[in-house]
Length: 268
Image 1: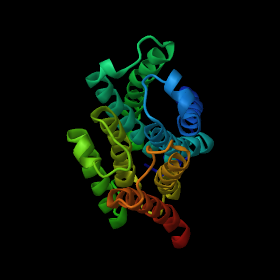
Image 2: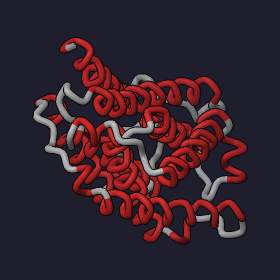
Image 3: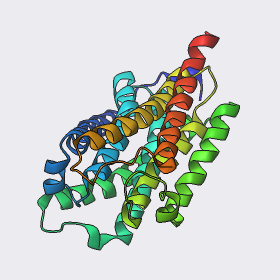
């Protein structure tokens, strides 16, 4: 992409759709993270509080690059954000199709949830294909981003293939449906890390880095809030190596995101 192309504003319809998605994701993040009891009653499917707060953490992580894309209103960083959106929503849609029986079909919200996850991959694919020449960019040459992206992709694939095995160390029980849903966050992060270009395009690195920082930080915060508010006998075992493995995983995500976002500032 040329420097002029990078500064091109987004098509108005795409910007409006992204703004709408930002509002919906913000609502979903607040609902599932801070109001899990209400979320369980009105969400498209039911989940216990720990699962709910992790879903909220994932949505807060998705919110960060969306806000950056909407505010910047330019193809850079929106091109990387769109690729992350496509990966996330397509993965979620595939899992939804595999687990249609897990949804509360008696709720109107369920049909809206499905409509959203059918429309978003189609809309994103349309724009990425239509503007593919404008959006062409080489993968990152950053070793940190490549290595972290590969690790995130492998873990995401593991969650898809054997969710209860790859999430066995998590501090709460993760069933196959939830584990496969969680895979979308790691696969989208991998795509963002692979496509985050070198320091000449710092806004892309900041968008991806912010997503990882928020995901890691919010996941740990959700764990602590859940542990503090859980009924007796349903909390978190902080003596378990698995719990600290989960904390370490999210600390690494946040540190990688911070390093990725900070590098452009150091390079000037």
